[in-house]
Length: 302
Image (cartoon, rainbow, N blue to C red; front, top):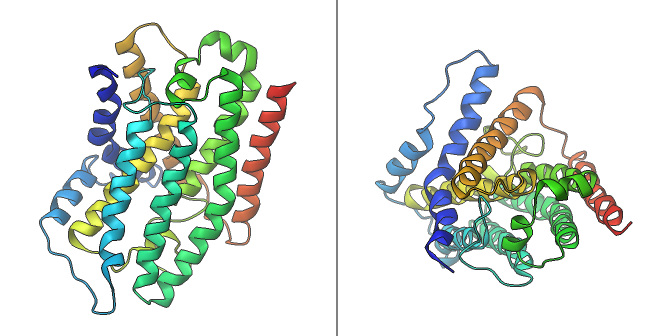
């Protein structure tokens, strides 16, 4: 590990809230509106951190620990993620399994914090979150296993460092299927349309947002920042596969940042041109993503 390994983490910490602003401005452009400032998420985080938190007398320490542990887990996942062909701070064989497992741990504490409130609405959201994640996680794991197969390495840092133009010429269809799979998983894991609508206010149709209705102040700031980090990390997975190594460190970083912003714009476009799917259709989408990942894996064996 060297000083350059800290650059991916610092970029994630500094720029991840910007992605939410890019998505919202893209959606506003499609709707013919000016939209909120690009830096609105930063303002919201600062305002929330200055407020106090309100806790129900029915909740326990689990409710208070959920946002803190969720943020800690997101920060740990960011330490595992390479960026711009630079290695991550933490890199070891099979670290992609830990990377995927950390999001499961983050979800577990978010769900238990929601259930700790005793709210029936939050219980509904928690149930949906667990069910959909059980379908999205296998697709993510198979996609990462396919990448490991194609690069003959078992660490995220060496996997993405091995993606080159020659690799795309040799395994383009496989990598393209993996990218499509990861894009679907990104939408599901980050509660975006067509899986979930982050702007809805109808408890009966909400998934992620309904689980955090009772959080306030700094706790909600932790949740919002964790969500931004999670979006950044999934976008970094896609960009790390899509962009080959240019041979120049700074050009790799600039192209990776530009790629992340393009992914955010794509999310905004998807949310502008599509409606949210019916809840009974969402499992079919996630199973389809898993099937694409399996096809990519089998193509890689051929």
